[in-house]
Amino acid sequence: MKRLTTLTLGAVLAALCQAPSAAPDPVQVPPSTITITFKQEGVSVDATFNKFTAAIDYDPAKPTAASAQFTIDIASFDLGTPEYNKEVLKPEWFNAGKYPTATFVSSSLKAVSPGVLEATGKLTIRDKTQEIHFPVSVKDTGKLRSYDGVVHINRTAFDVGTGEWKATDIVADDVAIKVHAVANLKN
Image (tube, rainbow, N blue to C red; front, side, top):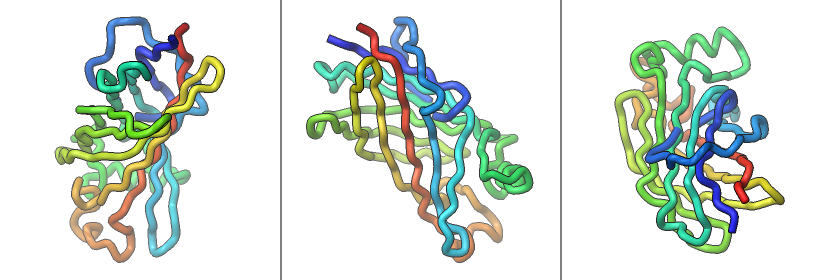
């Protein structure tokens, strides 16, 4: 039986809890990514986090023992333009100087159907923490395992966009966070 013990994501995106003591599995970077999608003035905008770490401990035979943790380097946020990248790191947005990371730590990963888990855990952005739930597709292809999930959050619940930017008429409140993590399986 194949067992994925630890997934470490470096140079692409996301962070973890209770990492096992076994050696980490090599991560395929790329294609592992963390992207976000939001609307600005009604137009869909995509951005990425270029640096993150993550660990996932998952055995399909023991899904209730699974855990996941992601840590995102906020300063690696990339909207594709240096001026915008600088702007979103300011106190009105992410306040990266005071809150340099965002984290997700799972409290449970439950199998809900073949190849699909329900992830539950705490998401912390800035100094705000909320419990979130979202489906994660798990797929083994040869010696690789991929995890794909999307969670929708309200940016204002995490104080991302304060002062004049708290209004949602220019930058919408709904943000989709998409995670695609790929690692080698151990035999």
